[in-house]
Length: 325
Image (tube, rainbow, N blue to C red; front, side):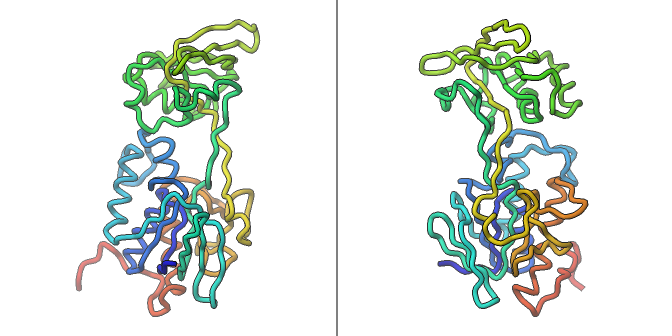
């Protein structure tokens, strides 16, 4: 069993900023995440993607943002418990919250901040080719260099499909996007960028066969209208079909939920004592799901948790930019 002032569940951007802010307020911090390394969705899904909505950065690569957040948080030496899922919660004598993980780790905290983003996520699978997982079939592209010089087929019509196509241009030998409809869910500007690069967009088509021996060698595409087939060379097949999200055991903690989001008030408090939420997993009227908004919510949650952690301190932290009087 370990004790901490603040337990943060979720090591994505909001969670890492909450870890920094709790340390800044002088508290001990433990960060718990089901993924094996910090960074949340950014690290797992798009570390090479450029992010444009973080204040102070015209653009910043996902990997660089995570590294900066870690450096900021690590100034206060938080404890990381990675590769474990928050499983059970109990309230102890009104002054502590005890969380037990799926691996039996017990963490006792004075306040809990849930910043688990969308929770755990399971990729949607292609109707064929699953036997090539790890042998050319991937669901995410965390490291672009692994695909240098390869022929790449990306299946999907959302932002991830087009972001990866844009990022892999100039690295891959060839890139084609296959989508089962004639309209894309991705942002129109991103679609236009990819078109301008000369990347072929194959619409109204689906992957009907994946062939190879030890590794993918080709992909067969079938047009849904005509039935015509086309064989594309491919050493990498990216199934960018989205994913199914699940907040897991947290849904059984007695929290007020709206779909798979945790309802909070203006203090980022949930309906359960000493439990707060921030980032994509939190919801309230007027919520806008942006990384930049999550940073503000994380700071709001920590500051409003202060009376629960140390009643001698006030909610307002003072200005970090202020010098000595």
